[in-house]
Image (tube, rainbow, N blue to C red):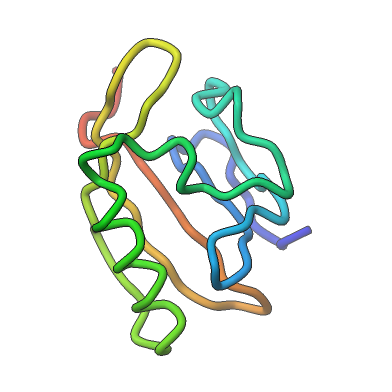
Length: 104
């Protein structure tokens, strides 16, 4: 597991391979991603209109460029919600996502 303190944050943190396969769900506040499981692609919960952009984010990660603040629409149980994704590599590639608006 990644040594990350996520207490009190609204960040979704996924540890992934460079092709987007989820290896570990490090943080999932409010269980936003109830259907996503390790071994599955994070692309499967991206709304169809944002899939091309999500694939470009993964390509950026593969080239080592990383990516910050990529707005992607995500299909959640409660409907489509825009999340801002950032990708970086620590020991393994990670994707962070946060809602555009944080509930108070």
